[in-house]
Length: 635
Image 1 (cartoon, one colour):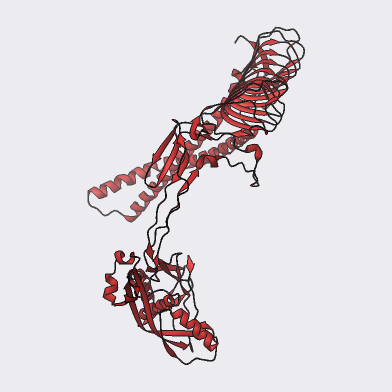
Image 2: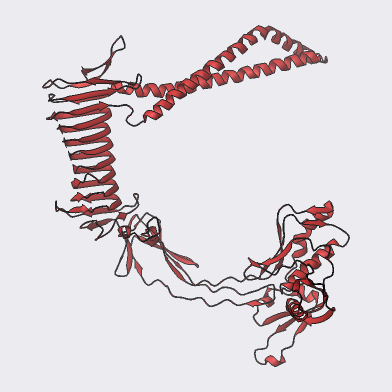
């Protein structure tokens, strides 16, 4: 928005100039010159418009000296159309005859906070009336108001009586409100279009936008370049917009509210595509642009002047030196094979972060590295400060942290594993949390915690803790919240039941009276007898009481259902522990401990299998006296 000159007409000089008449095409310029000549503020001067001449000219390219300006009548102005306005040879100008004089007193509309502004091209002119302005209607208000707008336009060197045919209709509703109210206070700023030329359509230079390249910008949180995340590969999913070519378009000319013809420039053409595309990229073209979209998921390649999408990538290592971190979309069909096998080197280097759909790592994952995938295979070892997360995860030697759904570890060496189902070929220390755990060979110093089953094929070591915890996937805080909620709902049920009981008793006592009044009302109605007011009121009271009773019954049932839902979930969690099992297919060796964590009461039941005793299937048992213990079961 371009703010045009705004003037508060307040006399700042006691030395008034002698009024004089000028003939000019720029009243604002004449006011400035008069103020400078008489050494007064331009804000102390005003003018009275005496005559406006609108002139047109069709420029003669051959002989400009013979060109003559033609005066246009109001009817001629109304007949002008876009064909002439958009002809660059057609010119317009206005000549004004005005009397300039000093302001000796404020006009009746000078207190109104009113300004003129235009957009960047001055093809649209706005009148703004600020909030708080008070307008007082009288017989000449509308005439004075439009004269004030005209003066402000002329001070901004805008044409009057042309390009403003919409002004009166746009202001009609506002002026009607002023007329109806007499005194009208503007509550919120109001804006109206009071001039409208022909807006040019800007020229568009061609452009080549590499959308896929913006997916990884390599910047850290402070906006600095992060060379560890420099976007070695960039993943995409099907239908992703990869590259967009904006075609050049020459704009259309226009004419603003000063009568000036606006010429648009020729478009610059610098980025026409010269590359080719492979079979996995779709080209879509229209009049405005060309789009290159991914037909399938994968990562973008550019080789030999051709863009394409591939899904498989082989790299020797992922390190700061060679690739930097690799972050792709998990749902992009990208698979990476990391080939470094040297046990003395890291296939995934220190501090590297890798996010990919599928990754096969022939070697080791180094310190502080993080790997995230849907499916991952690690043929080497995972360092004790590294983290790997995958729905389907296979690890050879694990010392770090692993998270997933289906996890298989060949050798667990003091690492930690969390998943739904975890199988370990050999465990020599570490922790496992899962719904179900299978261990082929259990060594020593391992903590296994499951919500459903722990099964061991062979036991060699000791100092192991095998725990069944039904709250493995729920927090103790959540359980405490549910217990508190149960207590609260139970109290509400008690209060509602007490109130309901009182209503039921009252209803039972008054039911005969209610039925009797109901019969009498039906009889009165059938026989055309006027119903006594007392009976009608009594019947209405019964109806309201019955409605309240029905509401209480529904509320009581809703509370019962809510309590049943909460307590049912609570019981289900508790009951799960009686279905859980610890299974040892071997003899017990050295010191080992089996723990079942109860929810209600919140206690631990512990069993220490005697050294060299026969294994079996262990579960939680509750005696008739309510005493819990861990026993060998038949299944």
